Image 1 (cartoon, rainbow, N blue to C red):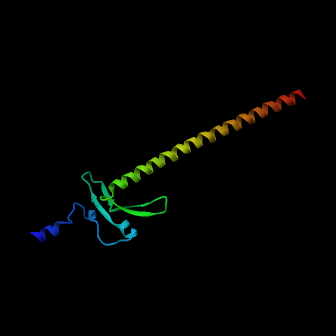
Image 2 (image 1 turned 90 degrees about the vertical axis):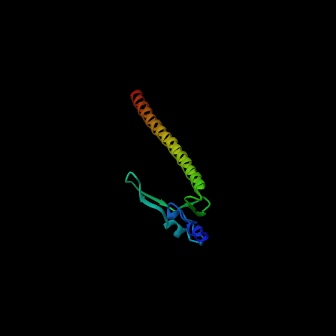
Image 3 (image 1 turned 180 degrees about the horizontal axis):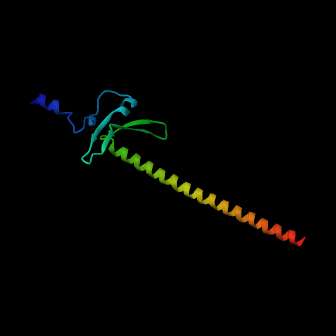
Amino acid sequence: MAGHAIATKHLTANPGDIIVEQSQSIEDKAKQIAVDKYDITGSHITVPTYFVFKYPNGETKALHHVRDAKEISNLIRQMRLNEEDIAMEQTHSSHINGLVVVLGIFSFALLMITSALLIGIF
């Protein structure tokens, strides 16, 4: 009975859920696939065992899709917020660029009208 418990200790629904105890490089972890199946709708599903993230400080980490799920969610949330901030900055930048173009056209038109009036006067 004890041998049976040891044999089933590492059984999971997906073989990729197993966390290997031996040390692996980030490159080796990045190659591992937890799920490579078709779902009930016929869509092909591929889930990596580890998600590799490069942090702003230069550190690279391989986070396990089950054990580190909370940290992965936090990182994805942070990336979305950063994307929204970048999109907002680009929107503001495009509005400013548009305003500069409009002011440039207005200044050019004013210069042309003033020039025509000055030529007509003199």
